Length: 143
Image (tube, rainbow, N blue to C red; front, side, top):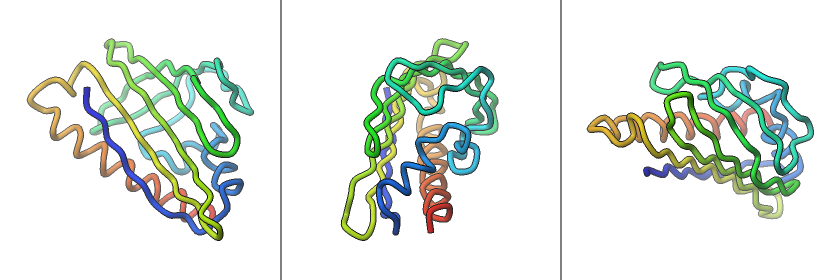
């Protein structure tokens, strides 16, 4: 299993950041690996909800069956997923109040498939870049 963790400071309150990051219909605006939803999506998100997403990683399309394991407004979303190829994923979003700003943490853990091959390091580097771009997108949306 490989885990990628990135963080950034956004110049907005946790509530404003949450409005963007917790709205599944806005994920294509900021989460670079997310392309669309292939199933009905619950809104607002709640623990135990599930949805299927179309994603693209290293220019490869992938469908992910997500389950929302933990949702705590306006600070935490934790989800677990599995692809059609049997790759397991975990995605965690954390938003912390820093007074006049928010610290945003993104963490993705991947187990199986390409991540366990010699290409794993390239995959991990690509994912790190995608998540850092995603955080810059969030900052632009809440600024």
